[in-house]
Image (tube, rainbow, N blue to C red; front, top):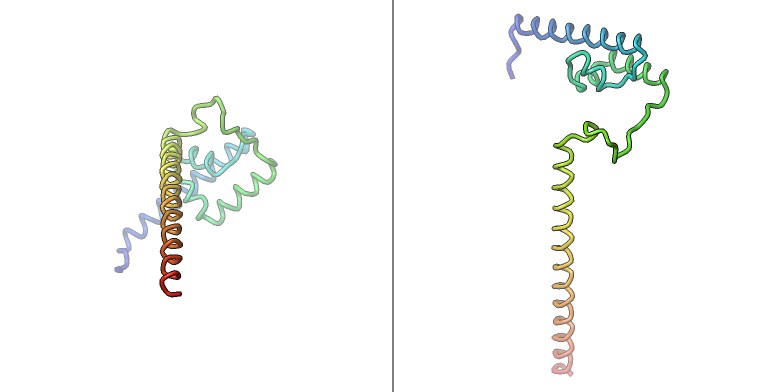
Length: 134
């Protein structure tokens, strides 16, 4: 792997520093407004990824400290009437997973029955063989 040229390293560093400034400003805005502070809320407000926040030790510590001060955050129920609580992608993947689970259960049941039949045939053949050997 080749090293990045110096001008690309400077640009990356500047972009990272700018994202950090935006995240710190977003955190301060949320705290000042008394709004719920979470990695997702800060990321949305700052226009950065949650991964960026988690990988930045300083920002991660600040967000966790603010969350600890605020206490437990209220959770939404799974059947919330708010359509935004569960994205369409999550619902589609959940439906797909449910279908696959049903298919796998049916396949396992079919294999279980086939195994029972095979074991019965095996037992019958062993009994016949025992009669011939005796």
